[in-house]
Image (cartoon, rainbow, N blue to C red; front, side, top):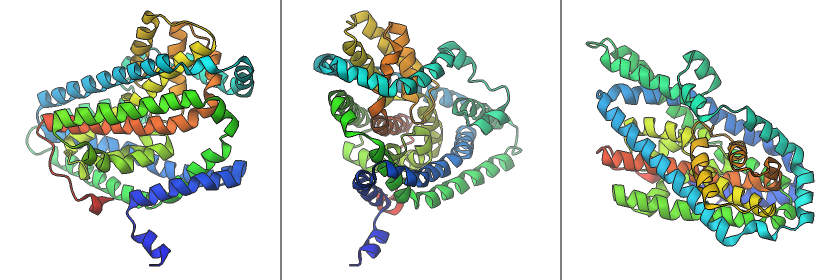
Length: 425
């Protein structure tokens, strides 16, 4: 068969995998020149992010308005928040246990440390400055209530958008008679249109993924990888353990779904998250996978997944635990049990309101390090490999969101039979 014909007939997730593997040698061949093709990947990300706000608002409004029971909405909300907080704390704990057991920072000599500080010190300073300007947990919770909903929509503030969509949807259920039907019908049409746009954009996914992977590999120095190999492997191992064992066990216990079916259904979202390093940018794909491939109802998907893309950062939290211990070990700082409990609490709280965009983990990490007295400039030690690890933890983040959707849907009797996977992807 003609390879071009075969590629055209191949399913989307296979095309994305092929693009990822081709991007690695392409990046190695082009080296720094791979930056010239990065705009193709950036364009792909922008196309996806373009529809996040209208899709989230319309789907969440429809889901809330169609529930017709405020108590059910509260019940779903409590289950979602409880699951997210528990898995986040568990992820950090796994990271701390691995980092303490392996001790990746004990093998970094002073020359390597000084070299990393020299190369990435200025970039780390920028991240620290942003972190210091970030509002505290209480202020973040207060700012969930938008002063101007239109401004929140324009700025893409997901927490504020979620809050307003929920209030708007609840109010629509309280409108007497059929007066709210035209409004609900309008947003149903908007939601369906956004889903169609997702399918159009995803046709460009292989090209976007190829460009993004090649650009990352091209700028990634082999020397940095070797010097931070132990640290990177600990983070990757922790992410793998959390994703394979925690999520699959939770899904199996609470919904009865086989791990194989779950991971097969969420695979396209994982690949996009890995390529874009963004939970928010992947949100439209995650929602599509949850509904079509996993059988989650629209009502649950529209509430659980947008909330997860904003506050559920298990992969990021695990990385913060490992990074904090690694930096402390490099500086010869012994962390007490109380310090490590503080890391668990701070990283869990710092994940609330953290935007699902590339690199946000470094900003929240600075907040954690400051709380336990570890030098903030130590962030420069891990900055060189952060992009690669960001790709891995983003894939874990969206997997956690999807597992929550499956579990909540199952406990609410909203988990139906998935559509044919081959039909969707």
